[in-house]
Amino acid sequence: MKHQLVRADTLDRALRDIQDAARLAVDTEFHAERRYLPVLYLIQVNTGSGTTWIFDPLDRDQLAGLAETLPTRPWLVHGGHQDMRLLHRALGAIPQSILDTQIGAGLVHDHFPAGYATLAERYLDRTVDKLATMSDWSKRPLSPPQIAYAAEDVALLAKMWDAIAAQLSARERYAHAEAACASARRAALELPPVDEAWRRIGGVPGLKPTGVAVLQELAGWRETLARANDQPARSVAGDGLIIGLAKRQPITIDSMAADRRMPKSVLRKHGETLVELIRRGAERPAWGRPRAIHYRTPQWRRRAWLTTFVEHVGAERNFSAALVCPTATITSLVLDSPTSRADLAARMEPWQDRMLGDDLWEALSGRRSLHLDGADVSRRAR
Image 1 (spheres, rainbow, N blue to C red):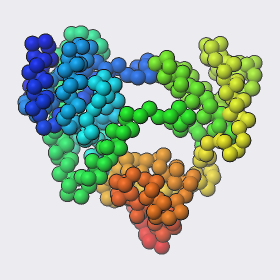
Image 2: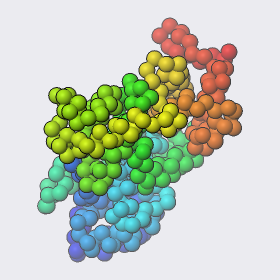
Image 3: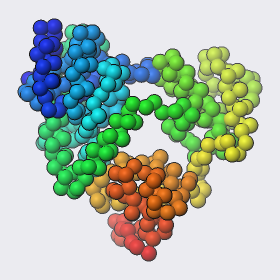
């Protein structure tokens, strides 16, 4: 399959090819290092006509042409969360219909998220070279290996999706895949609330309830500052640092400075702010603290059991538990147990409920157990 860098003399032809296409395979190359929001450097589009077009979003004419045409056709993407977010910002819009091979594959196989090379080998018996993944895409001109790598990222998407779609249809899961992809599209266009940033940090189960409140204050402050300065959140203050502060809860600059692990630059810039955030979190009343699961509690063991149960159901029925019922969903169900089957359904996306709801309700209501049969795990009704 051919690939071509779009230039002034080929721009109109490339845009007409996009307009004539029934669907588009779309990918991007970007740099995420040292930034909160990645910088877009390349847009690859395969129309199914035999040519992969490689657009330069730094070229205003190319970007303006894509803004008029690219959102008008359905897309195929692979692991497209960041692609959708970046292209929505660059183009001003993205299509309603975006199908993701990674999500589709996760509904017919228990591995999620599977990489592009993995799916190319599984569904197309093709070996894909991923050596250029960390190339410097900001440099111009691009090298021939970079161009070939960028083109290959979309050249196989249509055939890959069609192979996945056949399996989805055979298992009557194609509509579930469409709904899951629509959910992923919505999530890509929404920045998560800053007061939820603490949930993405490891080590929460080891904190006391007051420590979780302090962590919420610290993580929300860090996220806000990172967005304002367009820098990675961890470059403001590392995860280990704010988890440590949430555990120790120092209430003076001197007690904070006594910890040799405390970076002097962070203390100098933000010491007084950190002390105030720690004080504010520690003084919250019990009703104002975020709920979390703590180590070696009944809730901790219940989440571990449910995680194992869902993993087993996914392996048994060929879908990914991580996709259909991620840890955040299990945690929510443990912290606030549903009171009925209808209540459980209301707490999940409809496609998730159709895939797993009945089994999950039987597990939550104590009507399913797990047993070891030799080396295998099995489910049994009680």
